Length: 527
Image (tube, rainbow, N blue to C red; front, side):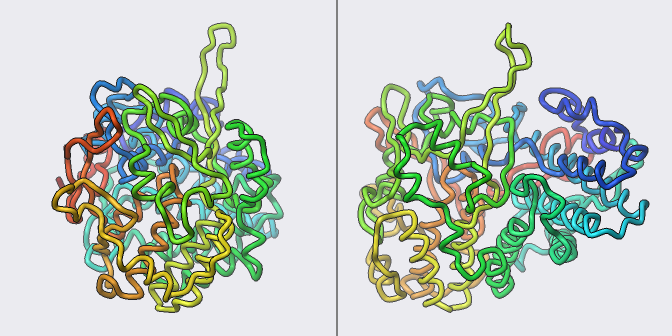
C-alpha cells in the first residue's frame, strides 16, 4: 500500500486518495509482498481503471450545454467554475482533482502488476495477456490525462508541456516531477499501446467488458491514432475492432425501441455487458444518471430544447426530422428544468448505512463502443479523402440509429451541408446556432464548402449525437478549434445574452491541472 500512498503524496492529493470514496485504498495489501501469483495480479488489474470520471466536467465544458439562469438553484460551486472555465477551487467526486488522482492511482496498479510479472518470470499465456492489459491500461490512463490537462495533440504543440509519465512503481515519499514535452509524452503512450496490443487477450477475463479486452484495446487504438493524426493506423485499428461485419456489432436500436418506455430499463440495457456495442464498461462515483436524466440535478447547465432543436438531436438532419430516430429524444421542461436527452446512464446507490440512508451515488458508462469506433474510422477516411468508404460507414451508423433508408454519398452530403449557415453568423441574432459550426482544426483540411469540409461537418454531427452526454464532444471541440459563446437562456428557453466566449486560441480550452498538484510544484497550464 505504501507505493499507492506515495503516488497520492507525490501529487499532493493525499486528501483525495485517502478519504471519500476511495475506501479500497485503506484495505489494499502491500502488493510488493503479495503479488506472487497470476490470480493476485489479476485482482490488482481490477484497480487499473479509474472510478472517478471525466464525463461531467468535459460535457459541461463543451458546447452541449447552455446556462439556464442564476435563479436556477440546481448547481454546485465546482460545476459553476467548470462551466465558466474558472480555476476549480472545490473538490467533488466528479471534479478534475478526483479524476487526476484516480488516473495516477490506476497507473500505479498497472506498474505494480508489470513489476510483479517481471519478478515472477511468468511465461504463460495468461501472464502475457495480463502484461498486455497492464500496458494498454497504463497507456489509456495517461492518454485520458493528456486529453484533459494538456494542449491537444498537433505538430505545433509537440514542444509544449506534457505530464509525468509513470513507468515504474514509486519508491520515494516526495519525488520531484517535471512535465516534459507533449510529443515525448505521446510517444510513450504509443509505445505502451503498441507493445500491449499484440499480446492482449480475453481468455483470463471473467467478464471481458469490464477490462481492456482485445476488442476494446483496438477501439482505444482507433481513437488514439485519430487524435494523433495517424489516419491510416486509425482505419486499420478500427478494422481490427469492428471485423468484417460491423453492422452486427453496433448497438441494436431497433430492439431498444421495442422496450417499455422506462428510464431504468433503457439505461440498464444501454450499459449492459451483453450488448455487443459496449466494449469497455466502467463504473464511477457519479451523478451522471440524474445530471443527464429526468431530474433537476445540475439543471442550471443543461442540454436544452434550444440546442437540441437548432444543433443536434432534434434538428432537421440529413436523414430528416428527429422522429426518424428509432429511440426518440426525451424532453423535460418546467420551472428550472429544460432538458432534451437520451436515456443512457443509470442511477445506482450504494448504501454504507442502510438505517441512516447514507451511501454513494454510482453510475456505469461505456468508455468505448463500436458505434463511436465506426464514426472514428469514417473521420479518418475523410482525412485520407477516401470519401466513398467514409460515406458507407456513416450510412451504416445512420441507418442503425434512425429509420432512414437513405444511402449517403459525398454528393448528397455536400448538397445538404454546403448551403447551411454557420452557427453565430447571423448579424441580427449572433447567438443563433445551426447544425454547422466553423472548423479551425489543428491540422490542415480543405476550404469551407469543399467535399472534405462538408463530410467532416457530417461526421462531427453524427459523433456529437452518438457521444451525447458522455464528455467526448469536448475533445472534438478542442481538436477542431470549434468556437462558441456561453449563452444565458431566458424564461422561454431562448438565448438572452452572451456571458462568455470560447475562442479557438483561448488557453482555457485546456483544463487547469488541480490546485494541490500545482502546490506540490508541478507547472501549471498557461493562463
